[in-house]
Amino acid sequence: MDVDDFWGLIERSGVEAGRRKARVAWLVDELSRRPVEEIVDYEVWWTITQNRGCTVDLYAAYWFVFLSGSLDGFEYFVSWLVSLGRETFESVADCPDRLIEVPQVLHLLELDKAYASGRKRRPSDPEQMREESPEFEVLAYVAHHAYERVTGQGSDGLGEAAEACRVSGAFPLVPAIGGVPRGEDWDFDDEQEVARRLPRIARHLGLRSSPTPSP
Image (cartoon, rainbow, N blue to C red; front, top):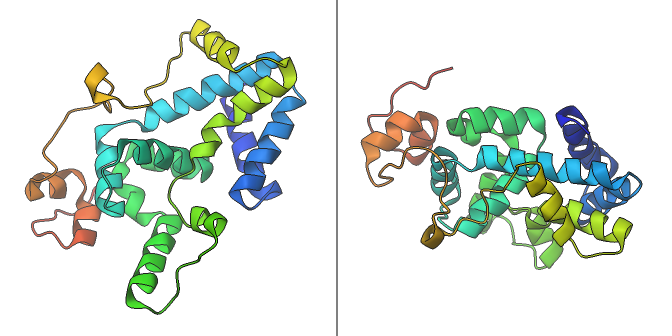
């Protein structure tokens, strides 16, 4: 399985099964029909992709757009971003400032405004609430479930096989043991720095001195 096959599965899951629970089930079923080696390949590409999203600037974009500094939440957010497909993920990974232009993000922000104003009632159904969250934690476990189904063993072997390919995950982020997003650290409280690094998001926040964003 190469990177194109990996993204093909991610994107097909969104076509074949709309809701998140169904997407995960579809991916597990699809991977379970394949050799163990392809399940390992999928896990390797998943890890490489998540690692690409584990950056300080994308964490900052997540922080400012969704008003959350949770490290676990950021990990699940990157998984959600992967679920939106290759074009969207790579665009935002290359330029985190573009997060504020993603249609699914704008939709979620509009929903939050509608809930806050009372124009719309928040769903009480837990599954519907998860559908409206910019986090998709369980998508990260697809290969684990497929590996267990095919081999009849625990998923530890999957992790060992991925590490044998010299691929290890940046997540989970545990600062106490050096697990932090890659990239230059900077002060999120410095409005000028926010405006310089994330001009589109700065304008969304109403910060002053926001320069014109680069293409």
